[in-house]
Amino acid sequence: MTDMSGIEMGKPANDEMIQGYMDGYDLTAPEPSDNRSHSYRHSFYIGRAEKLGLPMISGRELERHADDAMAADEYGR
Image (cartoon, rainbow, N blue to C red):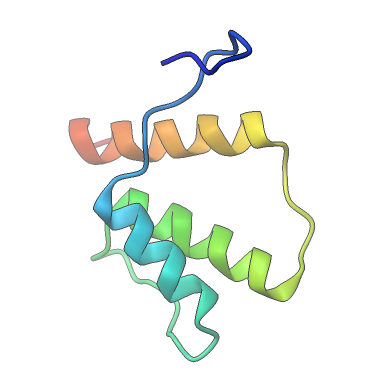
């Protein structure tokens, strides 16, 4: 997928990513365990970091990590 500037973009977020982000943003939510998908855990930590104001990696790196998480879910890595 390419955005309007011609930059290659990652896949859109899946439902697990959306739920993980929302749970991560909720500081009362427990840390995810290995029974959650890679997508969920990736987004949980992004949501938690944003809520706490922690430094983040670049948007391109976030997209790459998100794509890797979705691939791990899909291909069982």
